[in-house]
Amino acid sequence: MQGIRAAVRTPVLEIAYEQHGPPGATPVILLHGFPYDPRVFDAVVPLLDGAGLRTIVPYLRGYGPTRFLSERSRRSGQQGAIGQDLIEFLDALGLDKALLAGFDWGGRAACIVSALWPQRVRGLVTCCGYQVQDLSQPTRPYDPEQERRFWYQYYFCTERGRAGLADKRVEISRLLWKLWSPTWAFDEAAFMRTAASFDNPDFVDVAIHSYRHRHGQAGGDPDYAAIEERLARLPAIGVPSIALHGSDDGVHPPQMSLGHEKYFTSRYERRVLEGVGHNPPLEAPRDFARAVTDLLAA
Image (cartoon, rainbow, N blue to C red; front, side, top):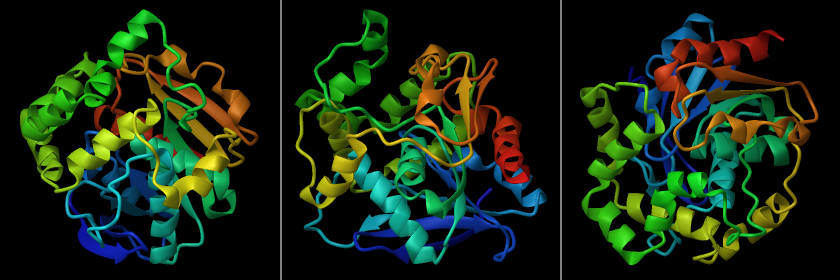
């Protein structure tokens, strides 16, 4: 469900976004992750529109029509960059406050802004719980089964992985959709509508840097050093929050968000969605939209 396409400029990016609903209504920012795009919210948007809300769905850096303003800007994918992008996006739109709802990279950006700029956030819907990364021990291994699930991250830390993502971005992304949502038979036409957003000149560089940075295989952009320093403390989130977690998530199984309430100092609720994988807005749009409206109603 493509809405009105627009763009705003931040200090680093021209961020393309789609918007729906009355301009003066309560704004809800819907944030996608890797490798997805705004199309995953196509069934969520009409539900929120029907509730009288204004939905704004940006394309993250490296996706669709979003572009860097300067060739000299580093194509960083580190968490500080996507968090900074989001707060600068709110500034560019002139929004004092919005509800943030996202998954994967988008959920991380929403968690970062909720933790560091809580006065700008009416509520948070995050998938897989607290998504600020602990980068203090990048070489610490997970259990072997989780290491297997993260194969793609280690692949991207190699030059073979960079070449693979550059040459076969559609095929790799399709495989990740299948692995991460193993009980969901997604529509190939729907996937290809999203895959069009991967044809961005910065898609590969941003994704590769994201995974290399989180595993200590690439340095950070000095422009984000201050925000990374704040994130290193794993700041608590003090806004009302609902965490959604698919019971069949093939990359972050639901046990990984157990105990995350320790990171939240306001209302926090965890909802496990049965039969859902890594992509709740596309797999369970009513549950995703209900989390948004429940927060606003409260």
